[in-house]
Amino acid sequence: MNKIIFKDLEIEHVCKPTLKNSYISVNKNAKIVLRTPKVSQKFITDLLTKKEDWIRKHLLSVASNKPEIVNLEDELLLFGDIYSIDVQEARELREFLSALKIQNQKNILKCYDNFYKLYANKYLIPRTVHFSNIMNLDYKEIKFRKMKSRWGSCSYHGVITLNIELVKIKKELIDYVIVHELAHLVHMNHSKNFHNLVQKYIINSRLIRQELKKIHLHPNP
Image 1 (cartoon, rainbow, N blue to C red):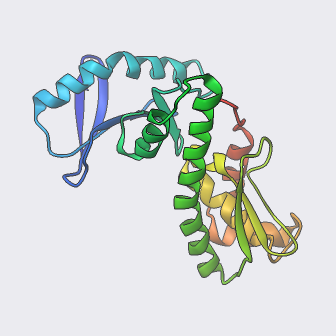
Image 2 (spheres, rainbow, N blue to C red; image 1 turned 45 degrees about the vertical axis):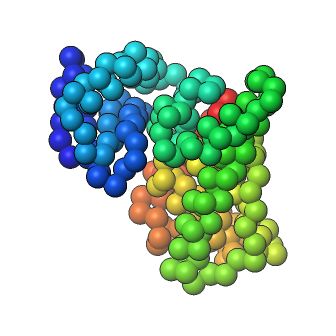
C-alpha cells in the first residue's frame, strides 16, 4: 500500500496480484483508493486520467455533503463507497443490464434491485451465521426485503428480515444491524439488557446506532 500523487490529488494505492480488474472508490471522508493487480505506472496514470472527472465529481459531492446518488448504468453504491460499474463486484449487475430488452429507468432500477438482493444473500447470510455462532443464538430463518424505513426486524418466531439496502452502507454498520436483530431473539424490546447484549459484541454500539440514524434510504440505487 502506498500513496500516489496525481496532479493535486492524493490517492491510496492498494496492489493485490490476485485482483482481475482495477477500480477506484471515493468514500465519505473524501479518501480516494485505487485497487489494482500488478500493473505499470503508465497503466495507473492512464486510468487516473480517464477517471479524473469522475473522481472530482464525487469529491465535490462529499464536500457539499450531498446524499449519495449514483448515475444509473455508470456507478454502483456498495458498502458505503461509490464505484465505477466496471469493477469486478458489479459483474452480475452488468450481466443483468446487458440482458435488458427494453432500456428504460424502471427496468434498469429492477436490475439494480436484483443485484442488491443477490449481493445481500452472498454477504449478509454468512455474517448472520458468524454472529449467531459467537452469540450462541439460533434463528429460524433469514428473509430479505427492500424496506423504506427499517434496516431489519426480528419476529417472535425467530424469523430475521434484513433490508437488501444494507449492502449499500459500511460493513461495521451492517454488523451492528445483524447483532441488533439477533439480540431481539433474547430481548424483544430495547431495554438496558438488550443494549448491553449488543454492546458485548459491537464496540461503540451507541455511536454506530447514532450514525445509522443519520442515513436516509434513497430510492436511487
